[in-house]
Amino acid sequence: MIKVGIDAGGTLIKIAVMEKETTDYRKFPVSELKQAASWINGMKNAQICITGGKAALLASYLDTAPAEIVEFEASSSGVRYLLARNAMSQTEFVFTNVGTGTSIHHLENGGHRRVGGTGVGGGTIMGLSRLLTGITDYETIVSMAAKGMRDRIDLKVSHIYEGAEPPIPGDLTASNFGNLMSLHAEEQLSREDLLASVIGLVGETVATTSVLAAGQCGMSTIVFIGSSFIGNDLLKQVVERYTELRGAQARFLENGEYCGAIGALLSLA
Ligand code: ADP
Ligand code: MG
Image (cartoon, rainbow, N blue to C red):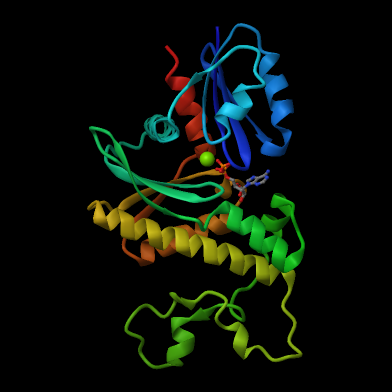
């Protein structure tokens, strides 16, 4: 018997397939929802559970009606599973899912609770990148951003204090994109620089919001998941550094983008 867990989100359809002891992962863009459905229909004797905002739509293309699970329950159980597999023993923590948008959850022994979120997320990376550079391909955006410099675009606390001792770490961003007004007319910004600043804006917002939410729950460990971290070391670095600057610890999970799909799969009997 094959077990299939599906997390059909706003941008990507994530699929986890377990046969005997091995789990395989696969993703499709939502624009290829029908192709995803026929790929799933091609697996005979499969037990399927589905979650995510596009679950009902995808299910309508499947040959047999799948089981359904609430998204936050699925992602929580997927996070616990991956933590255990990576020998991380946290039982109580906050996790932040940086998907198209960002949502933040508190997991305790007894259960879980959504504690907040922000509309700034992976979709913001895609949208602002397109607006500023015309580029729409995720991998291109991420690899170009890694070569960019943010210092002429973003205003740091140390820029404002100009050598004087600032009351907060000078390395914190005082204003994302706030340095542009002092740019001289003849100065050119590269697309790499703009993309790096977009990732900076998203990473810092996500980290700051998560640390504040974690503080309200009395937590200082934050597990970050979601497809926005795929191949995106720059976003990981920004999030890790900003989380630490603000006094908490960031953790990333291998295959963390599949937490929802894994949780859906695990809910199958
Ligand atoms: P959702 O569950 O809302 O679909 P995900 O966790 O799958 O969200 O994250 C979606 C984000 O992941 C996108 O907004 C983008 O920043 C990033 N991403 C990673 N890989 C891709 C890809 N191949 N195509 C588009 N976006 C991608
Ligand atoms: Mg999602």
